[in-house]
Image (cartoon, rainbow, N blue to C red):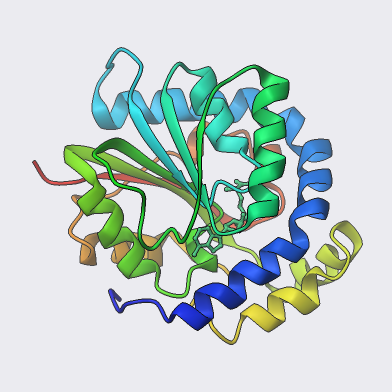
Length: 236
Ligand SMILES: C[S@@+](CC[C@H](N)C(=O)[O-])C[C@H]1O[C@@H](n2cnc3c(N)ncnc32)[C@H](O)[C@@H]1O
């Protein structure tokens, strides 16, 4: 699926996230702290496996950076990170997070389907593929923004099963309504499986996908069923 995104759909999804930014920041700040070390190790190991044990800094683009969770961890690993998001409020929270953690990141407001100019060594996206109206087109664009031999690293899962929709209202008030609203424009609004993501990667021209979710302790991804982290290289 490499169709171009509908600009109206991108804008509508971005508006939903703009409205969610403050609560997302509060929720993730409370919840994410315990997972930081595990995610940092996962990124370190996955990067070594995909790109070889290169000395930092790698040029990294984090798409749908949100409140900067992954971008900040990657900067803490010594990489030169650009974080792009369609929501200004998310980026405001991300800037504050980077300041708290003492790292420097380039922030860009924009649509992840058309990434800021590369080349990058690595494109990351955590919990974002499912919320893009044209995820296949986005992956193809990220591939073009990578240097030959660069890699993409995607973390996602199945989010909006009946069980999660019952849980989310308690955790993130209003979330069920918002996610159902976005569903009209998103091919994977319930979430995306590893198999589906691997298919999109192959269609976008990436090499064979490699799995990294086993590097994450199970208690660190309890919000998503079928949580996965997969990476693939742009062919040389
Ligand atoms: C579930 S949040 C994930 C945030 C962050 N990556 C994390 O791991 O916590 C999804 C993010 O994707 C962003 N987003 C949605 N559509 C986007 C688009 N077309 N371009 C860039 N960012 C987008 C939203 O604004 C939101 O910050």
